[in-house]
Image (cartoon, rainbow, N blue to C red):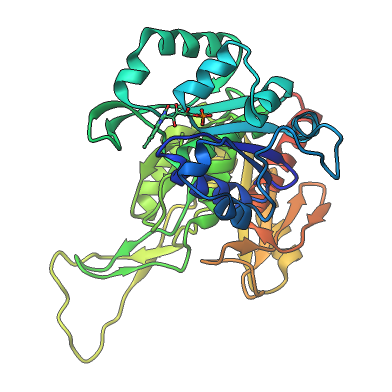
Length: 401
Ligand SMILES: Cc1cc2nc3c(=O)[nH]c(=O)nc-3n(C[C@H](O)[C@H](O)[C@H](O)COP(=O)(O)O)c2cc1C
């Protein structure tokens, strides 16, 4: 998600400094290059060795030392950064930044930085409510600093109230939003489907498939980070809803059909990553079917959601998925034409590192012209980015959408 991005993580002297370790790990895991600056007070709470190990780089903490790379460390670090995150941000450091004080490496580097700055305040409620602190925060917001939190809850000192640092995952999402925001996607309605459906046989048993929902969830999450208004219609999965996404939970193919059609008229882009069951039992027993010698299930076809959307579509971009085990190109292009899609994302689910349940995928994107783009094995987040990039290119080439 953040490959190639340079992030400075500033850590100041609050109890929540330990949570910044997890934040650092999330940035690294997402592919960012992270440089950590700690204040003297921060080192009272967490050792630089912890951040050094997680970020794979020595921690910066001294203003007055030479550097191998840059003659002036704070200027060099600031120039390199795409985003500056300070978490936790103490009352002291916030006050300094708001008033133009630069008396340590962290505050001096913030002053030299031209990139966006995201601040995650954390402090005791009384400190937070202090009018001087409130004025500082207002001033920082007015100067374009991004603020996240603090949250309401139990504080380290035992008090209840506002002052808890936002959770690392929430700060991570806010950082991704700042880094990834694309004006093209602002206000666009993206409808995504994900996961399997379950077709009931009786109150206990169902027919389903191996879809984990990971690909669709990655598409929904990425679209939201780019700035789109995302609705995710999901079958039963073991995944957390992506932040900032409107969720619609369904179970059967029929329910998914109805939810998709309800949301279709307002959608600009529809990405159908769900593995909808093609068939359902003709009859669903109201009671548990008892064990016997033989059981025959009569199956009838479920409504074909994609084909229906293909018929109804006006200005929408319609993207389908083809999970194939053979004749990838032929099957993908056939589905694309039959269902009146604009793009189809195909993968061979038998390939190692592609398809269901794994965190990676090996995709090819096919166009109506028969052209295609092949991609190497990548994370489902990276694949999601490529799919959304292909949609964007298509819309830009055809302003009618
Ligand atoms: C145990 C302990 C916990 C503290 N927690 C916080 C805190 O959560 N937020 C805060 O603003 N200050 C907190 N402080 C006070 C800061 O450490 C102090 O203001 C320090 O000067 C901050 O320096 P810095 O902003 O350069 O890191 C705490 C102090 C102690 C001793």
